[in-house]
Amino acid sequence: MSSNPSPPKFKLYNSLTRQKQEFEPLNREHVRLYACGPTVYSYAHIGNARMAVTFDQLARVLRFLYPRVTYVSNITDVDDKIMQAAIDTGREIGQITRFFEEAYNQDMAILGVTPPDIQPRATEHIPEMIALIQSLIAKNHAYEVNGHVLFHVPSFAGYGGLSGRSRDDQIAGARVEVAPFKKDPADFVLWKPSTPDQPGWESPWGYGRPGWHIECSAMAETHLGLPIDIHGGGADLKFPHHENEIAQSCCAHDQTDLAAFSRYWMHNGFLTVNGEKMSKSLGNFTLTHDVIARGIAGETIRHAFLSAHYRQPLDWSEETLARSQKALDKFYRVVADLTDKEHLEIIDTAPPTEFLEALCDDLNTPKAYAVLNALAKKATVEKTAAALSDFVASARFMGFLTQSPAQWFAQKPTGSHNTSPELDASEIEALLSERTAARAAKDFARSDEIRDELLSHGITIIDTPQGPEWRKSH
Ligand code: AMP
Ligand code: ZN
Image (tube, rainbow, N blue to C red; front, side, top):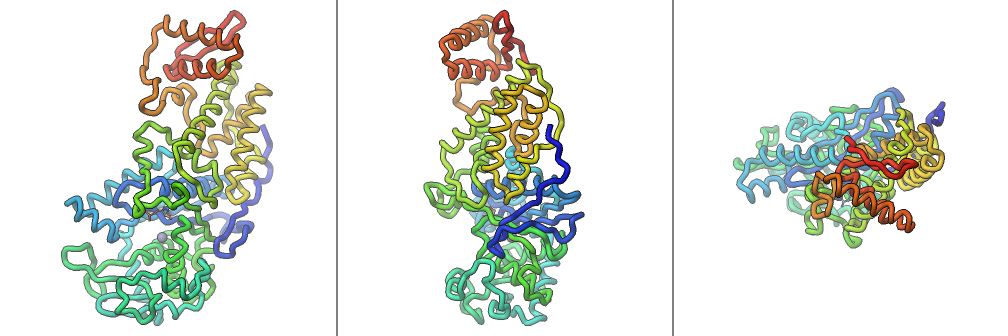
């Protein structure tokens, strides 16, 4: 067991300063984190899940380092895509959003995502958004025109500082739907009118609904207070969403420093398919829900995400999953060997410093994973409870090895051969003999395969000097 007198310092690549920096929370007693969550009009795709796992892993590290962490991740439950889904399916908006919010949380839980401490819904924060918009109008950063309220981009000199976009790029990237009303082509919507059949709320500007960006400014401030410590989301949100959030929040509080809204910004890279960003609009998406339904373990999907550094793109394919499944099979085999054959116990312990240092280096999960492999090897060689426990504690810190080896090997994806739950004694004996023969022939791949198959039926092999024995494990 490693002693860990002073935990490592956490370093984070701050998208705002474009530098890796030592993380210093405003208040060391309470770290406050906000990440932009899903728009709930259908199941989340694998790219959305990457964001959820990335920020879950960040929250795990922060919770280890600091006494209190509040992690807020919102649910966008008012949006034109949701309105379209209601038209397409004939279902009520509220039914759609609650259903997919629940589905999202269930699927993320399977990926080992601890629920955020607060998961605010946009529709439950309309008064806060209206108050922010009123303040922006009072301070001449926003104006009303034809039932719309628009943020006036030239009123904020710092605009573009997060994304580094030039004025031309900003205009090209801004939505053009209300172009005729805009004082400036880069201006964006804070509030827009709704027809009576559309979702809406009464406001000083008539019956309408908020633009997307204002919800996060309002919910971050309401639940965390400003400035928050870390704000994040996928890299696609840097512009315009996060740029607009900064403009709204800074201007509402007469701040010119971009860090007055959030002190650090963190963006996960894209999950791609053949090099292209996975997205619903491109149609190249895989739903997390469907991958889970195929019987792929949540740990396997999580492993696939964490095998790449969060800022790098990660290309999604069946091979990505197969590699992760194999890597986890290996980890579970190490645990099965050491607990069943060597009778070692897993002791509750903190992960060793070397492992934590890797994660504290801008959440370097590939480096942490390399340490994990070294710890697995060390445990196999040393065969001590301490080495095994260091390995298991580290793996669990990343959300792996959360089940028993028997459970793990029992849940094979649909279509695999390991679906029958019961084997009779003669079948077990036959497989054991085949394994003994395979080992004698040094065909360890086959002998491991047989061992995994037996484990999948809840049968553990114990190698004794008299030869292999078996027992039913639980
Ligand atoms: P959305 O539901 O599209 O608003 O996205 C929810 C979260 O997932 C946001 O933080 C997005 O930035 C993130 N996200 C969406 N697509 C991807 C992708 N292909 N790769 C990584 N993150 C993504
Ligand atoms: Zn947001």
